[in-house]
Length: 311
Length: 270
Image (tube, rainbow over all chains, first blue to last red; front, side, top):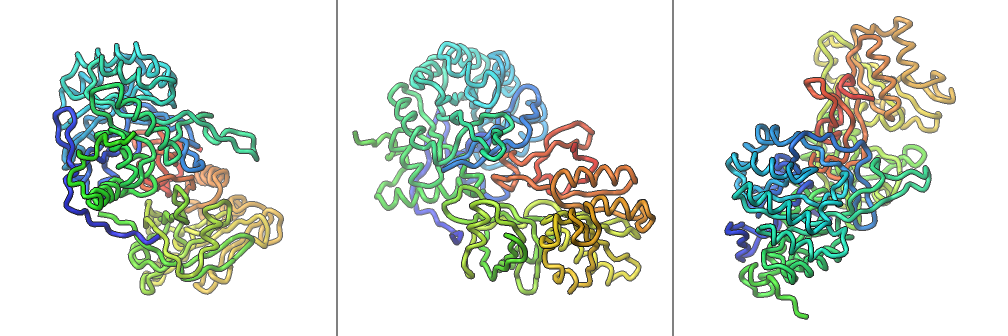
C-alpha cells in the first residue's frame, strides 16, 4: 500500500471540447474538489484537465445537517445539500483563486428555477477566468433537483434560455435517475448545449439496523464511487450514440484504466469524483496511469482511443 | 505541496477492552504533529475511505507517532490486526491545534473515554512549557470513563509527571460521576479558579456540549475537539460538518476536518 510516485510517459493526453484545448481529459467532478483551494495543496493543478467547482447557486445554501455521508459497499451515499456561499461570494472570494490556477475553470451552477440558471449565467458572463459553465440539472439531494432534470422538455427549455443568456460554452450534467437518459441528452443538445456530462449520482438509501434510523439526515442521498461505474458506462454509451456533441464521463473513475474504459465507449473527457476523497492527488494519478496505459498499448494520443469500442 | 506519506507500523498494544495503541514510523508527521491534529489512515486497499485518528503521542527524534483507537468497524479492526511492518497510506498531520492558554492561566484538560488521546499530547506540550518557564502553571487533567477497566494506560501519563484526576460513571475509579460534573465541582469548590483557567475538552459530543455550557456559566475560555466521520479529511467533501457560527455570528456548517477539529466552544451550536 506504499504510495508510489508515478512518472507520465510521453503521450499526448490533450483533448478539445467546445473549441477549447484541455491539457488532459481528466477533470475533477463537481462537489468533490471544493473550489480548488484544498486540492491545490495536494495536486499540481497545471496537470489537471479542468477544475470543476462545487455547485454555486444564486443565493447561499446551508445544506443538510450531519450525517451527510455514509460509506456503502464499493461506494458512498451523500446528501450534502449543495452547501455554498452563493454566486456573489463565489465571485468575490473564490473566483480570483481559481483564475490564478494554471488549469481550465468550469463553474458548476445550480438553481431551483430556469430563471435562477439564467440569472447565474448572466452574472458569471461578466467575470473573467471562467472557461465553461456546467449546468447541474440533476442533483438528487434537493427538492426539485431531479424532477425538472428528468423532464426532456424542461431540460431543452432551460438550456435554451441559458444559451441565449451567455456565450460561455455550456456542459449539461444529466441524472441517471430516469428511464431514458438519451432523450435528456438530445433535449440538452437541441437547447444548445456544447457538451453533456454524465452521470450524476444515483438515488440511494442506507439504514442503521441497530437504531432503525436512516444513516443520512436527509434519509436518501446520491450514490457514487466504484459501485456506479457500470451504470455510468452504460449511460455514456447510450448518450454517445444519441448526440453529436462531446460527452464527459463521470462515475466511479479511480484509475487510468477506468478512464480508458470511458474513452473507449466514446467519452472525450472524464471527471474524477469520489476518488478525490480517498486520494487527494487522484486526478493526477489517473492521468499518469492513463498515459502509461496508452503508452503500453502503443497509442500516442488520448484522442485516438475515443470511441474505439468494438461491438 | 503536501504529499501522501507511508506510515510503517512499529507495534500494536492492547491497552483496554477492544482499545489499541499503535505506533507508526513516519518522521515527517512525527516532526510536524501538534496537539489536536489528526492523521487520516487508509487501513486497507479494499476500503474506500480513510479513518481519522487523533495523534496521541509524537517523538520527533525517533520519527514515530502513536494513535489510540477502539475497534468499532471494519477499518479499525483491519488496522488493529495489521502485522508489524505494515505500510499504510497516510495523510497528515491534518486539522488545527489547541490554542495555548493566556499567560498565567492554568490549562485544564477534560477528557471522556478515548477523548483523552489528543489531550495527552497537549498536556505534554504544556508540561514542556512549564519546565521552560517556571512561572507557567502545571496543567490539570480530568479524565472520565464509564468504568475502571476503561481507564487507558494511566502509567503512560504518570511516567511524564501527569497525575490525572479520574471520574467514572459507576464510581469504580475516582469521583463518582462524569468528568464534567467533577470539573464543575472543582470550580464551585474553589479548587480551580474559573477566571484563571483555560479549558480543553475532547470526548463524546453530549459531554462537549455539557462542558461548553459549564464553562460559559463560569466565564471560562474553552476549546473542544470534535469527532466526525470524514470521507476526505482535507476539506473538500463537506461531509463532516458541525453546526457553528462564523466570525460574523451567522449560523453555518463548519468542517470538522478543516475548520477544526479544535473549536472555540462558543462558536459551536450544540
